[in-house]
Length: 496
Ligand code: MN
Image: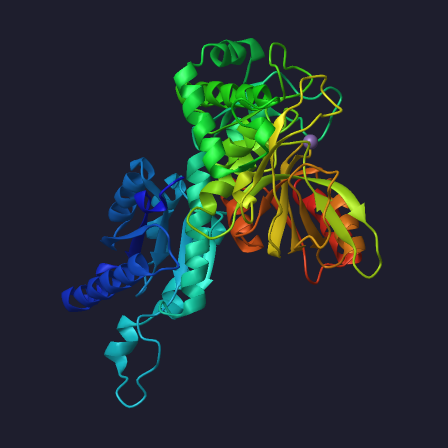
């Protein structure tokens, strides 16, 4: 998966020449200490790089231009240790192309009551310097994240870390390519949308490929490669004897390995970060790609079924944002309800393609008939998923804008065996409760397909939506139908 330490955010401190050499030296010294502390903070997964204090319109413009161009820079953090008259920032901010976090902090945590004098006041004036800067960013209608507190504060470091994760996901989308085998599942609405607008807004491209191009690759896979992959399956998963080499039903697993190798080659050759297919257009494939998709998802590719390219992209972004954290990010579908009033639950799953990165414990590789698609019995991994805080997110095309919708959920460990349901599955309780969560989701037009996260919270997703400059809605603790419906009504006006 992606190593987030290859990315940088630049720490840029604003000031002016008014204060003289000695004060500016102290400003630079303090900024270096701050940048180094953020760089080494365990909560922040990317590099934080100190940049020399900017004191003029020209210095600000030059630094931001350099940040725009630098390939591995995913955003900037700004801080006004002293006062930096904000008209100096107009030219630079007007060309800023990358996400910005405004850190409203102060070098000293405490006021030194017995020694404080006017020199101290002149040096430590972010309380008003950051307000001047904040005005200009608001005046220019620029999105940014504002984080407030002392720079050694645990919560501040966590918030900065979350924002850098969102920035890494955003960076990954720029120039990303997603492949779509065939088109949309026929007549389905929510999975479709405006791919031109998406490329303009999000920076990724979605293009279609004929399934025959993939089938040709699958058919040219070498026997040695298949053999190697079969060894890996047998050592990684639990398999029934008749699925192993020489077994009566081994040919299903053999076909699944061929499909995986062909798909991998297609994605690697084309430098794709994710893909989607549709079971209505799999001519020439012997079985539906189940196992292959599950394993590619676990390796960091985005995927969603039935031509759903928006969820493909979202799943991929989530995987980048959650990189290095315990837990997984996955393609999910709300499938069936348990309406017990004392224990209401959603059962999430898909026909086959549930992300193997969610598996708690060793997965079992199984072959079963599938009553849809008209193909041979497909191989798939079957497993349960751990409980705990999680969320579902859906990216929707509302016609005049994209909407990113989040529902915070509480996942629960399955209490019952499901001997006749041979697919991977997840159980969760939507927040704030089943009825409110589901009603709010439907009022918002949320899809049945989602990106499901065990390690990202709503704040990261909100930061991400702000970077994309799209609508963000959260359903969670504290949501009421009355206030949520008002938010929907008011947003219709805000985005008109
Ligand atoms: Mn589906």
